[in-house]
Image (cartoon, rainbow, N blue to C red):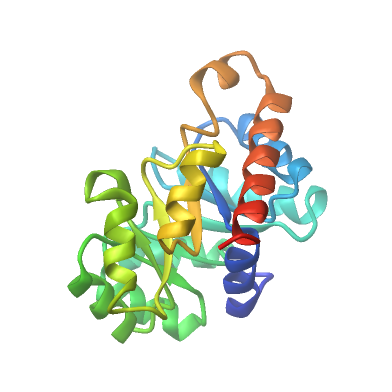
Length: 225
C-alpha cells in the first residue's frame, strides 16, 4: 500500500516542478540514482517499467527509500495496461505514469485513490483523460509534438489543466523557462539528467548538481512568470 496519499503526490509534483525519470536493472545503481536526487532536494521520483524484472527493482527501491530517503515519493512509469498498474500499486507505487492514456488503468487507479498520469499528445486525449479522473496529464513526447508552443496552445482553451511535460526537457535555465512560461506545471527528465557519461563514471554528485541546478532554475522562473 502506498505510503503517500494522492494529494501528497499532486502537491509534490506542483511544488517541486521536477520529476526525475529513471530505469536501471541493477538495484544498487537505482539506489544511488535516488540518493543523488534526494540530496539535491528532489522529493518525487519515477522508476520506469522498461526492462525484465523491473518490478523487482521497484519493490526493492520502495523499501530502500522508506528507510534512507524519508519523504521521497516513488511512482512507476511506462505503465500501459491495468495488470501492470495493479502490480506496481501492490508494491507501493504512489502514482502511475504511462506513455499513453488507458481508460482501464484510470479506472483501477481511481479505485485505489492512486494518481494516474497518462501520456497525451492531443487536446482530445487530454480531455478524455480528465473526464476519466486524471488531474495531471503527461504531454509526451513534448518536443516532437510542437514543443513549448504546443503547451501554450493547449493551455489557451484549457487553462486549468495541469501538465507534466516530458521529452526534450533539459537541465538548463533557458530550456526550462520556455516550458514553464508556456504553461507546464512540472517537467520530467530522464537521459538529460542521468547522462550516459555520468552513469558510466558513477558520478552521482554530478547528477545531484544537475538536479540542484534544475530545481533552483525552476524556482527562479516561477517567481517571474
